[in-house]
Length: 159
Image 1: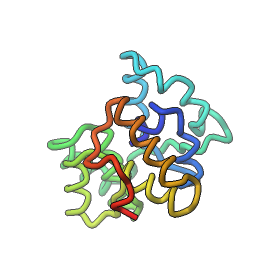
Image 2: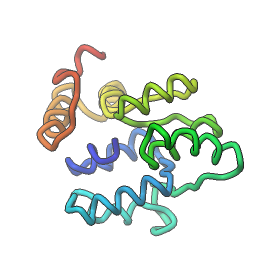
Image 3: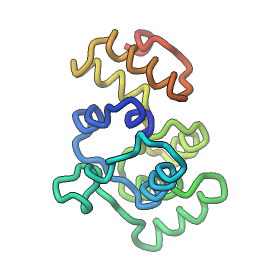
């Protein structure tokens, strides 16, 4: 989900919508791997990451305690490490989980975690008047051109 907003140069929209976002260290490692693989849209992301930048709004967080580690271990059987860590943390801390991965969304719903993703965040941006519907649809189209798969091209059906 972060990659969709980064790919179109709109990480700022995530900050406006969510304020601080907790980012599992495993997700940050995946972002660094993506940057090394040529996903240049991640360049400069460290300027948003706390503690790498004191005023960063993407707050690195790690798995803590036996319960989170146990859930993480169970989830790595069916999810990538970043999604598994994020979902384990969200499950144990009562946090929302933002992802576009269908499998992670299903597992998260089964675990009774609040789930949203790119489409939900774009809809919220319209509802909070951060973007017009036309602007949000244009941003969605831009994300899709960058490789994001979405089940719709018009957010009006979610309004």
